[in-house]
Length: 251
Image 1: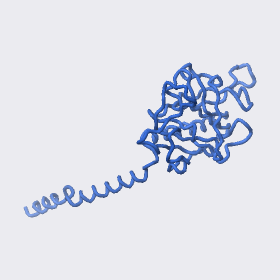
Image 2: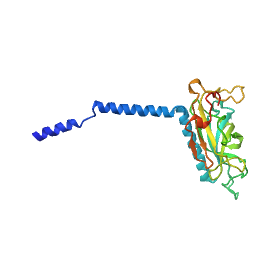
Image 3: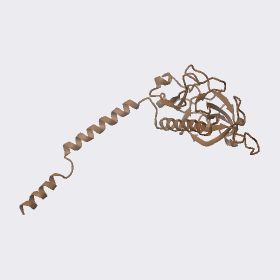
Image 4: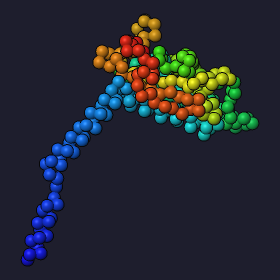
C-alpha cells in the first residue's frame, strides 16, 4: 500500500510545465521572433522573398538543362508582351538552343545553329512572379560593371504561344553551364537579377518603358541575387548590396 502511494505521488510531480517555465519559453520565443524581424527588415516582403526563391530555382534549372543536354540554355524574362501586358516583367521562362529535328540529318539532336545567336526552344512553362512583384530592368545588370541586359524577340523562341509573344530579356549559359554573352566573352563579375514590390499600369500607357513604381509603404521592398560566371547564385542580403538608392521611385 505504501509503495502504491509513493508511485502515484511521483507520477503527479512529472506532469506538465510550471507557470514559470512556460513564461520563460514564451519570453525566449518573443526574443527570437523580434531578432528575426529586425534582421530581415528592408530585404523584401513575402512576395519578393517568394519571387527570389522561385527565380533562383529557374536559374538552377537552366544551368542543369545546359549541362544535361550539352546545349546552350537561357533564362528569359518578359520585357513587353504584345497581347498580355499584365505579365510584363513578371513572366520568366527557360529555353535551350534549337536542335536539328530531321532524323536523316547527321546532326540529328545537335544544335541547329552553332553561331552566337541561335533560335531557342522552350524547356519548361517557367513561372510568374507573385502579384505586385516585378523584375527590375533598371537595377538588374549584365555584369558588375553595369552592362545592360540583352533582349531578343519571341520570334527567336520556338514554342512561344501568341499570348506570350513579345520581347524578352535574356541570361545565357553555354553548354557547360557557364554564364556567357552572345559574343566570345563572359559576364564580367557575374550578372544580377533583382525584383521589387510595386505597381504599374497593366494596360501599358504611352509613357516610355512604363517601369513599375514603388509604393509609399514598400520603398525598399527589393530582393535578388548575383549569378556568378560558373552559373551559381548568391542571394543579396541588403538593399545596399543591390546598389538601390533610398529615394528610388521607378525600377
